[in-house]
Amino acid sequence: MNWNDLGAWRNLLADQKDLMSALCERLDLARTAAEVYPPDGAELTALRLTQPEAVRAVILGQDPYHEPGQAFGLSFAVRKGTPLPPSLRNIYTELQSDLGMTQPKHGDLTAWAERGVLLLNTVLTVEKGKANSHAAWGWQTLTDAVIAATNGLPQPIAFVLWGAQAQKKAALIQSAAPRLILSAPHPSPLSSYRGFFGSRPFSQINRFLEENGERPIDWKI
Image (cartoon, rainbow, N blue to C red; front, side):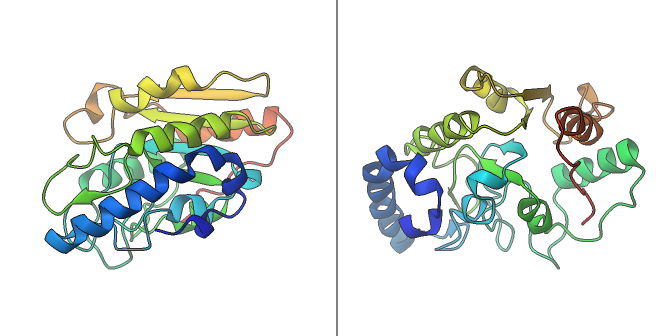
């Protein structure tokens, strides 16, 4: 994890530099004792790929996938060739229902990130096989700062909060600039049938952007 990977985010997160240094030290130590995901150097992929001026939507996840070969720094995404996790399959099902798109064959959401969708987890690392194992490390102080900094940007931005953990972040989103907050149950199989399916987030985001003079997001993968 490298501070220089943040690009323009560095100015917005300058007061988080000491925390990042402490997290780096803890990560280095943790990696000597156990396998940690995403791979070393990929922790800040979401911020590296989606710079502040490009952000048009934020999709907030909880923490990275904790099985081998899955997490690479974008919430809900997996590399090409990796079987789709259940939550991502459900996201694709809703994408098809909402926009009529054919479901993608792979789970690499890099194209979304490059089109202005900040795919951020609230916790950026996890130990192999132990979901939410780094939740008490202080990552949420950093990612709360990212959400607050994003909220302070001047462009219209949609925030997608799936599940109770993500929905707690709504208090950080108060701005004079146009904002859309979409809340729904998490897309996991345990909760997706409680209101995630049928929530139509993709069309709502594009309608919001167009109403505020912005081009819609191309959600094709």
